[in-house]
Image (cartoon, rainbow, N blue to C red; front, top):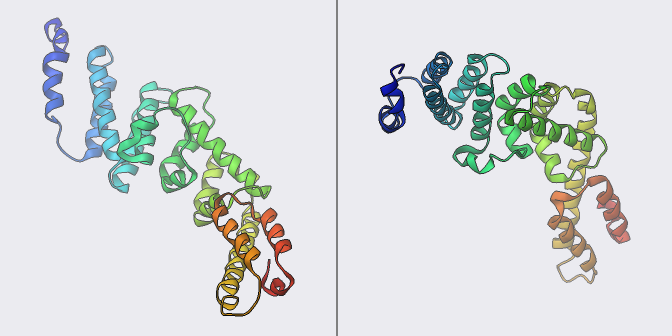
Length: 271
């Protein structure tokens, strides 16, 4: 590649053939590590460096969308293959984080935006590693901005839970993966915002709300629909409204409103 003749014809000749048939065989993460090492030794030849970086990105996406073992091994390779602050590592990790979170359609999410809480928790190992290493980064690469957006989202959700202001849909997401959520908060340096005791109290309150709502709905559907002249139309309408808007409801506020809206004969099983 040091010969000018080959450098001038890389894109139209040699690299074209390399792209048509994958020229390295073996375990995916061994290939990724070899490509990362090769890209570091080819810095003097920009056209080769660019090509190898493209190959690294392709292998990183393949690993990110593969099995959990391949994904976790590739993450280790990408973190350790380059020195801290290397823009190539940050660029590869940015693509890897998106591909592991969104799958093959990751390119639709290249604009900086935090994934959903459910997607972050489902891809826990990747985000825990990135938050631990890059949450306090002084640089502003695409990776840094993405990690900062994820951190801000986690901190915001934790604060909303602590203040009893989070909607029920996201509350259930937190409840279903609370150990992972607390680990990610800790990796973000924000563990003090929310305690397990407070989250446990919120979870129990939501369980009570869901159970009593189901009891009232059962009462109005079965016991008040068998010819007995009891007017429960307003209660049914209220329950339907709750079910329709459940995801965005804040349980403390709406539990109180729901209780006040019930007629006296439903008080024993009301909220």
